[in-house]
Length: 389
Image 1 (cartoon, rainbow, N blue to C red):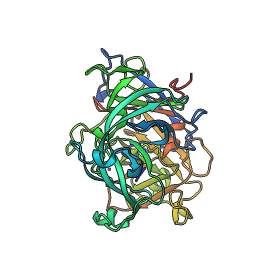
Image 2: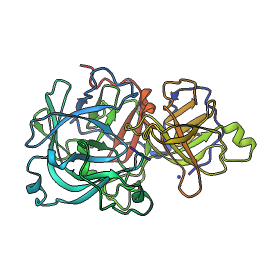
Image 3: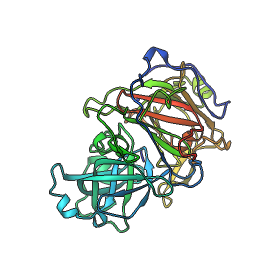
């Protein structure tokens, strides 16, 4: 849950909605023929998820009969659980492939320190019926606490205490290694390492790795049928981490008419993160972009006051660009549009590339597809039938 190439024409937020346009045909389209393995994993949230609250999944780990309910976070990668709640943890620390590890949540500055251990994870429907299993390394958290220095010089904060309260988290995102998550590689992602679905083994080559996030569940395994109607944009391979993909590209327009009059950029090319873990949005743009802010408590840290975009600020995020987007997330701050995040925390700087974490309200009107095999992101209007029954 976290926290930059084309120029674009001016756009406004008059639509006040997440609207989709024609696909970016020049980038090509993925092929989902020849495989039909797929499974709906309903969210544990009983009613259709409004994305005011995070989507939740039911799961258990090998050797533990307890079914946990956990946030499904697309802004991080990997399962993290308090080490004392992992059966046979000391033995697992000596298993092949086990190694010391960390997980850092940049929006809240929390660092977890422990060991990645091999584990079978079972996913359930709302009635606690097993629907899929996955084989991944999960982080047994032995130390936990705030670590501001990790984000500046990556010091590990060696004096962290054991977790003050149980740690339970599931990250299912991608391309997050550069956001202080170098160990958040695809082998940690529960949704991409399935070994069985509905009691049947997943044969090699029978499933297109990836998922579709709807309002009532997440569909794992991409097929010609469940991808019909999606608009796609191609992702760039993550060169340093084979098998992973970079975040999608897009552009951000803030008060486009005012910034055009001031001679600033109209739509700034940026990396885009659709993050189910947070209700707010984080935005990094060049100093030339002009905007007004007001002070509010930070939604991630209520004891901290931050500058947020002022009411009546116009924002539009286009993926992958404004000329031919597969989706446009447009709103005016304070208008009450369904896709408007609870707050937008901006940073005008040239010290980091332009970026926006949209938060989860983006998903109120658009399904989100991630193709981990061929490297695509897709968008399609909600709702999605996964989890209806």
